Image (tube, helix red, strand yellow):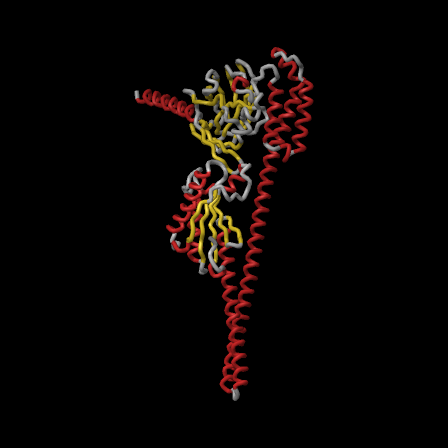
Length: 518
């Protein structure tokens, strides 16, 4: 009795697992790694026992629910022999004009996909194939041509357990690389005239699709020679297949052009693969060049900074030496004044002392200017690193573009707040005596009154955020909105209008100007 209960429970468990697998196959996630799409799908995998034949069911998915069959599998001498029996496989064009054939795949738990065979379009078919895996799942997909190396996301059937399926049941995660969104599916925008075609041989359609895929993968640019060969073969194929085409003569006529058609598919697939590899290599080379340029630029900037530091050190040493000499000359001049015997000698000594004191004052002023200029340069470099900054006669102009605000509003986006926080930190550390004016500007779209209000509100939004960051209110001497009255580009283009939508922060050094700009 216990043995019977155990057998019933085992059968129920197998049926539950089979149902789980069918549900798993309908779920998929896609993640992007660089320029490659990785599709992850679940399928049942069975580890077949050596020298023991067993069977699994082949059941249709929601795309082809009438498909049914079985696969007898025997793993022997390092290969799995698969005898497939299948019924009701539909015409691939019924699934979409881009599909021309069906491929039987073996999927290993590690994610390897082996193209076992192209399946003929028949109501009933028997197919014998071999797989190199001992543990695998079987899956049938609709494909644009038979030379594909990776399964498409259009799964029409897959294996499920039978009551007498032997072996160890394993659920594996299938991962295959490809581009199911762009290489395997054509949008109406890409090919508006693409429709289901039942009057052209499927092999010819497959050859066309293979060339189309290679073209979209960049083969004309990255695999020109391989792609050209595929195009030449395709043109020869187009001239060779019989017209009008009769489905009943399919097998007889296929012998005339099937070899050329499969050559086209092979060459086009080679062109697609080569293009992908070469495009990836070109991207890698570009990244390496960019990294090399960045390193070279950083090294150049480091060398320049080192040279600037050395010049500053030499200038400081020269200043100290000049001040020492000036002080020594001043002491000597005072002594001469004290020792002068006549008024004329005393006047001459005083004149010499005044000259020396004036030279010393000039040295101090020059040194102060040099330090101020260096501080201003450091400020310019620091500001340029976070926001577009330029020099004008009225001071440093820091530009906040329109993209840092919500559309039509004065609300600062998180990115804008982050940049302004850094700007506030830089200004708080700046030792110079500066003042700021904040000016808002818009493009010409909308009424003048609306643009004036929006530009003023954006300028005030920037001011308020800087004050929250710790800047003193007396540093900001003006906040104004100019609306559309001061464009810096043409408002006739979208790019020009975007440039005109901005907030500018004018930073002027009080010590270098007689009065602040109004």
